Image (cartoon, rainbow, N blue to C red):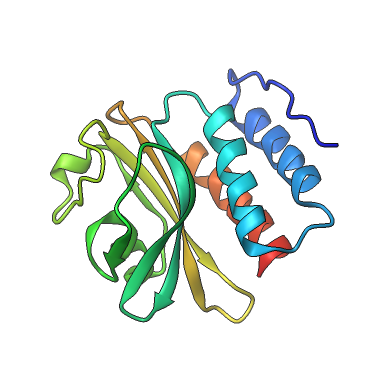
Length: 163
């Protein structure tokens, strides 16, 4: 049975290395996309400080993301490709690190308490976009390049076990 251990967040590089190790252990032996997304969202939500939402949106057509497993308040169910931070991440096929969501053109406010956001696209081995991992925080400027690199590594682990 997997048991998450509390991780010291003082050094983000050490923190994300340990979180990646925990995620590898959590997903080892399981290939179900939904189960792995649910456990990944829960692990991230409970390990990272100052989050109010952590979860997945899956690309169900070229035009639309659909809500997947998450932790936090109820969320927007459908997001058009190219709209909001998540849809923009899909359209650009790149990570979006947004310090102030209120300054992001076309931001979709699923939770008015969110102030910053980190969205990592999930690209399979063929380069197809599967969806995104979306993290929201009530703090402006919560995410930095170390968080981006760390969550991109977590996304790669999820893809390796699920895609």
